[in-house]
Length: 452
Image 1 (tube, rainbow, N blue to C red):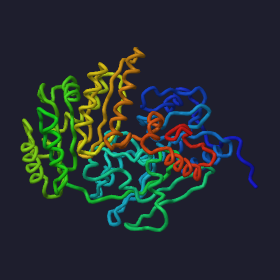
Image 2 (image 1 turned 135 degrees about the vertical axis):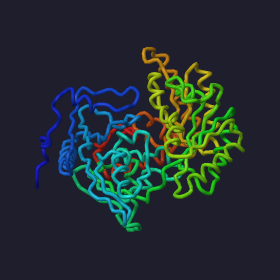
Image 3 (image 1 turned 180 degrees about the horizontal axis):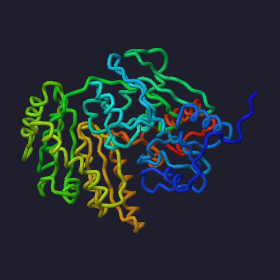
Image 4 (image 1 turned 30 degrees about the vertical axis):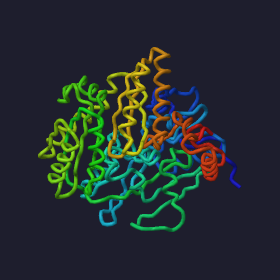
């Protein structure tokens, strides 16, 4: 019998400055531990070696992609190993006939999109971080993005996975064929598991034929009720828009403070709507414009070509840099039934006024997924405490409306306290039992999601 390894054979990062770059993610308050190692995997063999060694020695492992998590899911753990897979960035197969691509976990979302587009195909999941987030990270959190209203989320486009389990066993889930029901859906189990069950080393993604270049409609509203009526009308459309985004008045003010994007000062809400339906984009956006007007839009602008469409969408694309310029914030991620979206916005505005905070309520209106930003003064502990309390109130409000604590960012460590509220203790215990089946020693991302 082969004795357990006592020394990790894969080279770890020795430069302290380089190592520090892998210690934290983008979550609020993320701090590097004093003692940890970093392995930058370049191959399946590297991952197998780390997982074999970690299981034998009981060493915690943090699977990590671009370490852009907003929930603390990819922060180094004291005495643990960060297993970074950015270097596994090959696209080995693009098959337009069968409609799939095979990519390493380190492939950037945008790189995959661009590669399959060259073959006339489309990979729909489109997180705002598409230019720097990895496919492996997208799988770990079941990431969504701007176009979920029509196309769905990452899990809808994962056909199969290669995963390394603790102890180094390599398993494959799913299938490359268009259909297949052999056995339980373990692919779906790993999607969204945030590195708590295994390390994804290969992803087979579903592809669809490329749509047309999108056209955009921009509508401004002087009331949230009118914006809500417009969202409902759009959701009832036979041909769904490919994008429905909302900016509330605080988001509009932040964008306008960055640069003049033409939004009026007294605007309560802006809706941005797109169609990419092949052969029908002009027809669709004109029809959407009519719906928006009927719902009570004050002003409606319709793009005639893709260049103008991009100009109309520029204000929405400027939201993230505009909010970053305003300072430290909790970036929330809650999802409610579409019919309750405006109720959640109003609740966020009420909390902001009551607590003396700036809270921006913006996000993906088409699927009820808002990303409230709750700002605080990093130099003032009381300000940060008020922001965290508001964070809790918004999560509670979303749950009270029949929603969920996370639509696409995941649970990580920041939202672990709220998971039992949504799932209930019996379901939490069942999920812990499933984790123990794959990770009996509890070495994978301990302290994340389930607090154990």
